[in-house]
Image (cartoon, rainbow, N blue to C red; front, side, top):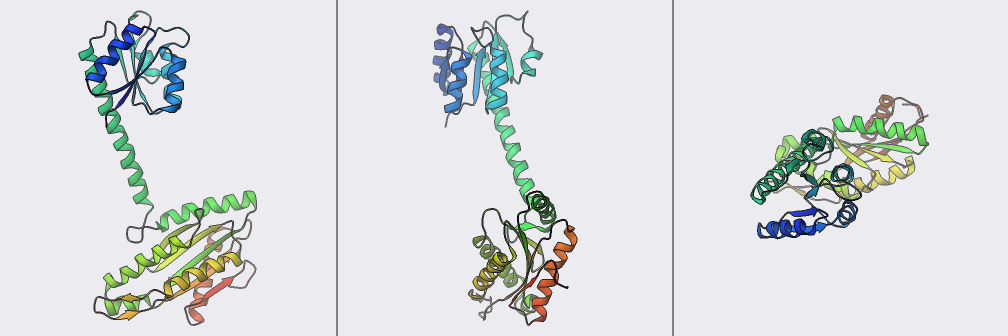
Length: 304
């Protein structure tokens, strides 16, 4: 797929000759006779590089460059024949990627365009790599849910939002029952299959605004914004039921059904984060004490 170049110049001869050369060089081109027309075109089309003259009626090339860099994802090459009035530094300060003096040699222009496009691709690759690295830093590699580090960041944000807007906020803490025994019996590879499948089940049971985390080992936690404790119990029971309906076959051929102990609680305005999380943890251990495979609730005012 060829890159898209926009040529902006009020001289039709310059526009036409430059467009013809760039088309022959393999680019997809568009033209505009002034800055205003260029901005309209940028609103509807994807442009990689804008080549603009500086001196034009109405908006000049530096003003156009400034607006492009503010509002659009395009690189700009500025062309001028007035070297005494405009400096390279001024063009670069407006966001231009390159600056060429007239008369323009098309071979030189082609080299400049290729360099700008190469740097543009490298910049996008770096940006995508950074996004991936940031995602990896907050994601559990096995289940693809968020990790516990991100949980503590996110829960502080949700608590702050709850205290500002007084919307309900609930928390689930889930623990796979008898997971150590399963691992010891069938091995970690079979145990990992359970963790992966539970992560998938959790994702299918949540809304877009909800977030799920592998809290550690076989423990998972789920933040449920805009959710009362009664609604949170429904979510917990849905996940619990979905996991119980799964049949896990070990590499040795034995089948098992896996259960969850779940603790549910709701945030109380102005309480500290640690007590909120600790209450969900205590509710989960209450489920363990009740024989596992159950959902237990601790209200903010309930005794631990």
